[in-house]
Every structure is written in C-alpha cells, then in structure tokens.
Image 1 (cartoon, rainbow, N blue to C red):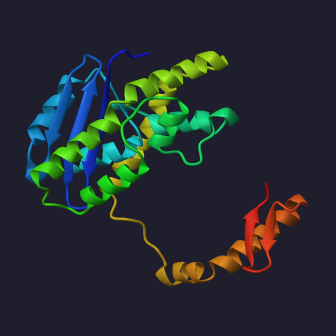
Image 2 (image 1 turned 90 degrees about the vertical axis):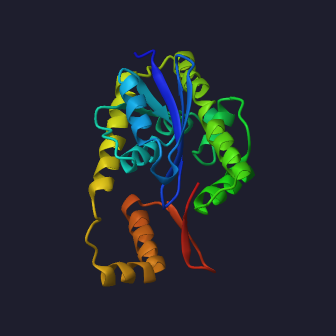
Length: 243
C-alpha cells in the first residue's frame, strides 16, 4: 500500500482545460492556471516530481482526460477513482445508500466536512462552462471551488479504508489501482478515437420507438422470469421496475 498520494481536480470546458489544483501527502498545495496554453511545462515537471505517488481523484476519468488534453502521457501514472471505490460501498450497504453517486452525497454519507452544496456546484459549473473570459473575482471563485473539491479527498479515502476495517472486509489498493487502469485505458481510447461508426437511420428509429422497444423488452423479461418484474402504467403505457 502506498503512503504517497496526489489528490487532484481539474476545471475545464469545451474550449480548454482551465485549472488544476493538487494536494500531495507531503502537504504541498499546487495551483496551475492552464488558460491560453500556460503552465504546460509546469504540469509535466509536477508529474515527474511525483512519479512515485498514486494519483487520487473523484470521477478520475475526467482528470485523466484533462491531462491528455494538456499533452500528458498518463500511461505510467497510477490512479484511484474515489467515485468508483465509494460507490462499491454505498451500492452494497443499505445504511450507506445514497440517491445518486456524486461527490457531495458521498461526502455526506461518510460524514466528511466540506464546503458548498448542490446549488453552488450548479452555479460554478455554469460559470466554468460559459467559457469566459473570466473576471478576477470570477477566477478567484473558480479556484476556491476547485480546491473545495480537492480538500476533502484525503478524508474520503481514509473513511473508506476505515469502513472496510469495521466491516471486516478487505480493501486492496492494488486492485483499486487496477480499476483505475481500466479508466485510464478508456480515457486514452476516447482521446485517440474519432468515434464509432453509427447507422444514423437505424439509431434514429430506435430513439423514435423507445417506448415500444422498452415495453417489448419489459414484457419479455416478465415472461422469462414468470413474474411482474416490470409493471405497466396504463395511462402512459410505460414500464417501471417493481420494488
């Protein structure tokens, strides 16, 4: 098990990667402004200086994709995705259930202090996706927002480890890194790919007939299992899963 981590988060929009905030286990805090092509060498040097660290992020694929957009080769890096690791707990233990696997819900269920709420997240996302240019106050707000997503991550990692200890279950960091390798491969594939060929007419026919197709699949499932796994709403003619 590693005792050296980099906890990080990026902010980005369709035009460019804007910002990266990084906290390492040595206590160093690093903020890099990537707007207009800045700090490409700085992020390369930062990664090289932390080659023996495991990178930890929430929904880490987005961070991997940001690094790829910045021209970084992420293949040598080791990653842990806290969203996947937390969801393995909240999806299998009733007392840890969350309505949706997102950072705020996971921080709340693990009782980890954090800044902000869903309304603030929505407001900041809208600002970031607007593309700028950002005024000085707006930029300072974006930086604070990015750090508010980084600072709780060490506590979230520790809380998940403690949960497994209390439950008497095993959390294997090497397996977590293996799961991160899958996300890394997926991020690299999507970054390099121009997309998959699609039969547009056929796809549009599926979209136009979703209700009919969904109903046929639901009826087939009910018949196969001999039970009303899906129930039909007679008013809307839509199927919902029972229970």
